[in-house]
Structures are given as structure tokens and as C-alpha cells.
Amino acid sequence: MIEFKGVSKNFGRTRALDAVDITFATGKITGLFGPNGAGKSTSLKLITGLNRPDRGEVLLDGRNPMDSKVDIAYLPEIDHLYPWMTIRQAASFVSDFYGDWDGERYKDLLGFLGLDDEMKIGKISKGQRAKTKLLLCTTRRSRYLLLDEPLSGIDILTREQIIQTLIRDFREGEQSIIISTHEISEIEGLVDEVVFLDRGRVRLQGDAEQLREERGMSLVEIMKEAFRDAN
Amino acid sequence: MDFDLARPIYQQIIDEYKKKLIRGELRQGDKILSQREYAEKARTNPNTVQRAYREMENMKLVETVRGQGTFVCIAPEQLELIRNEMAGSVIELCVSEMKALGFTEQEIRVRLEQVLVNAKEVITDDRV
Image (cartoon, rainbow over all chains, first blue to last red; front, side, top):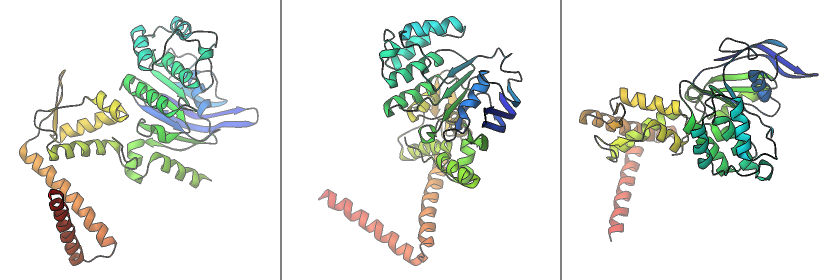
């Protein structure tokens, strides 16, 4: 379980998160939704320990992310891979770092995603780079998988493949996935829980099916309404 | 399948299976998709599919045999029950929408009759 307790984070004079309380349950897929600048990426970085809160605390299974030995696989929004590496070199780079790398799964995913690991990262298309990033983090058998805008700027067929990869490999009960995106409609059916962020605050959080049941609306419509009420 | 995203998805999964049972597309003893296969095919959260399957087991529509899969396992009375239940909800929806439009019961009856007659004519025309 991941908990945010009264978490605030500023970058200079910009407040990225403002006294946020969130609980990410274990074994679930959570959608972290909100417009650009809502605080989604900051939230994920706080979980990885790349950023620290100015106030409040982030707990990973009850511990500080810095001291935690919990496995986290993180897909950042930016292109973080070295362009001069081939996919295979990048893979061996990641596998050297993490003991939870699964060689069998790597081969399986490579085929499923239609990637050739001799390809050089600097020379492949944007969609292929997105798939490579996904390949490198889902090949690990991590307990937590954090995906920051995995579908952003990706064509529709590649999106489908990415979503299918996540479903294929999701280990119910033991693995938790958090997906941040401003494109909710793509993954409406994929999430168990939702957190709507807006300008550093939580506007709404809850169980996706329960929200549909109670409000008779899709998550996109529910989010629009939540934001209308807040403004 | 495409879900109505304004309604709980697990209920739609159950409804889809109920319809298949009523139409006879699925029969006693037939094996249905594994939860994982269903989730992949419908691009749906595996936990949602698990919930739907668990409820179908509780409703005595299917049975999961460990290591072998999930099979249709429904008593004839139970099938008749869900058949009536589904028919009831479809008709009720129709009637309540008609009433909301301001039609009287007599008008609804007449129109329903008309639709049935027209449908019969279409079928006869097709045969000719």
C-alpha cells in the first residue's frame, strides 16, 4: 500500500501538491487523472523517492520510499533511454540493476510488442520508443509499476498493444499499478480505482465501478463534473 | 465487446453471459473464456472480470473447476428464472419510457401489437 499523508510539494513558487491525502491499494490498478500541471508526475516521483515532500509524508508499505526495499518499476514521461544503445543493450543495463528482471518474459514481450532488440533507440519511431520503455519496466516482476503518461502522443494501435500488455502481465492481488494520464477515455475499463487531481489537490477518489454505479456516468464525465464544481 | 462506460462493467459482463445462455449460444457444460482471456479480449481490468465470474458462480450460472477452467453449470429452473427476469426488465424499460413520453396503457398496447404485426409482415416478405 502507498499512502500520501498531508503531502505538499513546491517547485520554486509553484505549488505542485497541496496537502494531499491519497491511498493506493495493493493489488489494484489506479488511474491518476487530471489535466496538465495537476501534480500527477510529481506524485509518481515522490513514490519513487526521486523527489521528497516539503511537508507531510509518503509511505510505501509503511516505510519511507528512501529506506524502502520495495521493488518499483517506473516509466517516466520523458525519453530517458540513451539513443546510442540498442534495445538489447538498454535491457541488459536495466537487468544489471534489478534482481527482478525476468529473461523469459523479456523474450515473450519483445515478440508480442513486435520489437527487434537489435534496433537502436535513437533510430526507432516514437511509438516503438514508447513500447521499449514499457518493455523495460514490465519485464521486471516488480510489486509496484508506475507509468507516467504511457499513452501520450502514441498512435491508436500502439495504445491498444500497450493496454493489452498491461492486462496480460498484471498479477492480481500482488502487483499494484498506477497510471497517470490526462487521456482517461483510453483506459476507462482498465482501472479499479481513480484519483482525480487538479492544481495540486485531490478532487475525487474512489472505486471506478462504484462511481459508475452511483452516478450513472463514465469516468470522463465524472471528472468533468468534479472539475466544474471545483472552479 | 464495447461496454457502456456509464454503467458498472462487471454487471455488463454478467448480462452478456446471461444473454448467451438465454439464446442458447452457451449450453450446459460449455467451457467459457478464462478470466485472463476475457480481460485481454475485452481490454478490461482482470479484477473486474474476476468479480463478474465470482458473482456468476454465486448466481449458479457457472462453475470453476480448479486447473480446468470455468464451465456453464445451470439448472433448467435457474435458466428459466433469468430468462423471465431479462424479459421483464426489457419490457419494463419499454413501458416506462413510453409512459414518460405520455402514452396511455391502451396506446402502448395498440402500438406494441402494431410493431409485432409489422415484424411478422417483414418476415413473410423476406420469405417471398
